[in-house]
Length: 306
Picture 1 (cartoon, rainbow, N blue to C red):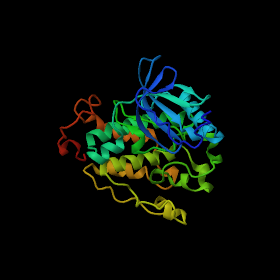
Picture 2: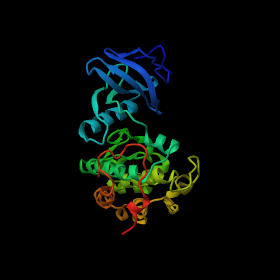
Picture 3: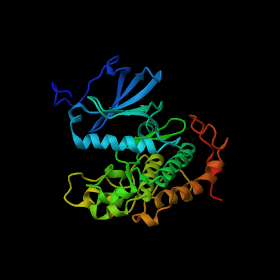
Picture 4: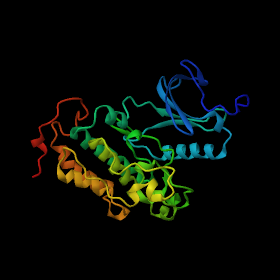
C-alpha cells in the first residue's frame, strides 16, 4: 500500500505517468469525495479510456473498497447503450480502480450552464434516459443519482456514475440519505421512507434533470445541507415545484412536473414518459436521426398543441 503517503488525497498523476502497468495517465477529468477520474491510454485496448481510481488515502478503507466493488458489480450487470461501459475492475493492489470507456462529449450540466438546452435536444435526451432507467429498474437496480452532472452528451447521451447504485432488495438497508440533495426524491431523504425507494425514485431525478435542462433552473429552492430540519435541507419534502416557465408545449411541461410528484406511486414510469415523449420526438425532422446537431432551432409551430 502507499505507506509513505498515508494521508495523500490525490494521486496527482501527470501526463505519461503509469497508473498500473500498461495504463498511462493523460489528464485529470474530475473527481469526488472517494474517487478521481483520469483520461488514460490503455495498451491492451489501444484506445483512450477513463480510469476511475479510489483516492490514495482510502485504499486501505474497507467501506471505500466495498463501495467500488459494488459499483463494479453493478456495471457488470447493467449493460445498455445509454449507460457507461466498464471494461475491467482492478479491485486489489495499491490502486483500486475501474476501467471505463471514455465518453467524448460535455456533461449535460456544462451544456446547461454555458448554452442551455432546446426542445430538439430535450426530447431525444428524455427518450435515451428513459430507456436506461427502464432497463436499470428491470434488472433490479436503482441508480439514485440521476442529475445533469451524471449525463454525458455523447451520441447517444450516456448516464454515468453508478457509485451509489443499489439493488432494490437492499434499499431498505441504506445507512443514510443517498444521492445529491437537489435531485433526491423525497423517499431518498428520510430513513423511515427508504423502503419506498424504487424505480420511481430515479424518475424523480429524471424530472429534476429535464426541468433544469429546459429552464436552466432547479424546480425547488436550494436547501441548506447544515439545516436542523429535513424540510430545510430538502425543500422537495414539503414545497411544490416552481411552475415550469419554458418554451415547450404545456403537455410536456406537465409530464416533467408529474415526474416530481411527492409520492412514488403518483409518478409515471420510464415507459410512460417515453410513450408520451415519442410522438413529439417523431415530429422532429429526421425523427431520431441526427437530433444532437448544433444550431437550427425549429419553428415553434411544429410543436403547437393539437
